[in-house]
Length: 529
Image 1 (cartoon, rainbow, N blue to C red):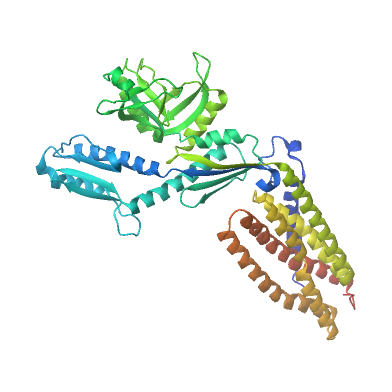
Image 2 (cartoon, one colour; image 1 turned 45 degrees about the horizontal axis):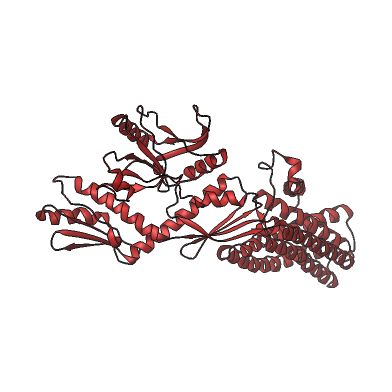
């Protein structure tokens, strides 16, 4: 009973007061703390409480196969030119999802194979390669994507796409969005309290694949109008609906070499544009190409559509460039966000959309508060009537426990959902379980004829073992729900786990401190419990 020196009492009180103070901002309306909301610890509310947007995004996995095919095409061209001797090849075909090319010198078949083999990798633990290499008619190479390799690529692309979506939503300044994979090719996005769902959809719909390419000045306009591209070129449409334009396939610089993108204003027209900054390698390459092609036009391409095709009046040095088009401040900022967060490795389309209004959430909050108040009042009355002074100590612990849970949630920037409120109410109802066990054990020791000090000491000591074991089993269940659950289940688990820790601390350590201080001061010969 003498293990509560003054420093320990002061530490416990200071710790509890600090956690309770963290709960205060959550009771203050955000309108009253304008400018400080991002700095104050505050509980966030989930989609089911404050409304918001729910989107289900689906990826077209065919894009992954096409992208891998184009990437392998460029890599093969580079590898065949590299090294000594240089391997001459004819036109590369990507028809029917296969990459094929013909060697000009049949004696270089073995050398070509040796250069191609390092370009293929093992597909996970399947024992297969991600590409099959065949030689047809002794001179033509055919590269085909394996099922295992494509599956691995899709999984990687979806993981990267999820992270890109997360970065873009974070750039909007939203708090506690839920972004999770669903199945092989879907992503669930929930953004609580979002006031502009259309802006979110526009932002997530951008693949943000940015490329700079030179215009093919040798292309026949008649053939281009028919959609026929010269060898080594491609035809793309303008973003504003203009006619097609022939571009060289070689990419000058791509969005992968960006380090920043911000919305700005064109100094000549005063219209919104996007200013981009390349990394050192991209800046050098862009400067070299513009130096070599002064007077020639180049195209700025976003998601396979030409935004503009200005002429290179002078070398563009310094590693910066601007993208001009029919932008508003909003659309320019959205493009800057998309470029900063990186391009999506696969195009996403919205297959399900729901806008949740705040009315249901308001009713749920009122019902949750009402349930919490009723539960707290009933518990307080029961404990006071049943255990007297010791019941008062337990009630103080319950009230402190409620505020401490809110404080911890606010400190963690946690999100409170409807299941979380259910976990909160459950925690309040079970918070006094420990005190019931302790008080009943003290009663039992008094009936055996032990002194007040001995009864209290044994009551806390013997009951604590049972309390910790019982809460350990609850904690294991909560951890499993937290690790394996998602959405509502995870929200319930978070509140439950916080409640287990705080209720054990307040019900055992804090109430024991209060009892010890009272016994020391009054030295009672008997207790009413």
